[in-house]
Length: 371
Ligand SMILES: [Zn+2]
Ligand SMILES: [Zn+2]
Image 1 (cartoon, rainbow, N blue to C red):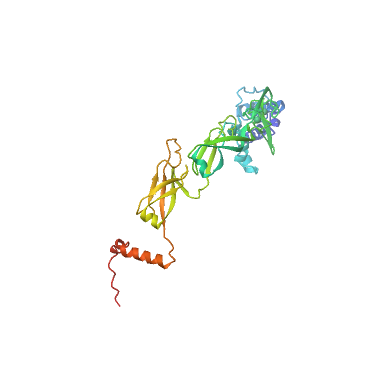
Image 2 (image 1 turned 30 degrees about the horizontal axis):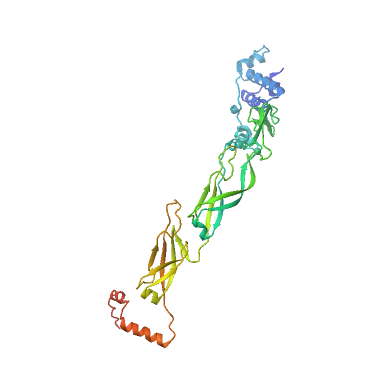
């Protein structure tokens, strides 16, 4: 066996040429790059022995003289990282990052194998105004990701361990790039060479499947427009054993024709005639519990409020109810006959008043306009 032929160099090759030739061959034949290939392993041993002799000036001289040279047992173990790719980087189109990226990058899947919590889901529920006074039940149609029944959410199914078919049990797979051969950790068995499980076919490894179901939800008394009712665990199932998300029900309350709501309190306008406001009256007002007659005192002003205790909405903390405020809206009569006009003029003569006195008193003196 001619050591120069093994490395494919001339007898006059310089040490640098010997080194380059070795590196080039080692890149193709290194066991790290050729797992399970006995021919490559044997050629790599030969190439390494030849290099060990020809790279050492004393041994090379002895070999050249025809002496038998003991191949040193301490052939430097050249790992993948020891190679100089700079020549390839200059020569080939593939850059250093591209070459190393493919070989050394951790499989992306590794980051995705962990458990992740399920997403929250949101739905809206519309309530009539009156429905807010007591707890209401709603049946919701829910389409959600549920735990896969075939793999119980794991995304994979356990098997009796067997050799990985992707790498024939070696834990590594080879790929070619031009004349260069690379190996990388087998992603299917994560480099172990054995397969103890397979991805679940039903959920494609997600651990969850789409499901449509009905869910009955209770909306508490006192809910208002924009209230959110959270039902823990009714959102999407988590991935690979992660906890499920929640279902969030957003309450929408349709407005009422005459009640306005502020928190648990209600507001309601009550129209009064001018005479009712002036002389006082008993008027019937609506409340959520049915009509109630209230006493309007004489001399009630427009916008004046009367409070009816505990006629509002139930508090969410179930501690009683809010109040109902009745607000006076005094309406001015349309006067269309002479007798009524004369009555009002007579009223004004008997009750002289200047409602704008305070307003006018507050005005500054008019500035003199000079010509
Ligand atoms: Zn599954
Ligand atoms: Zn494998």
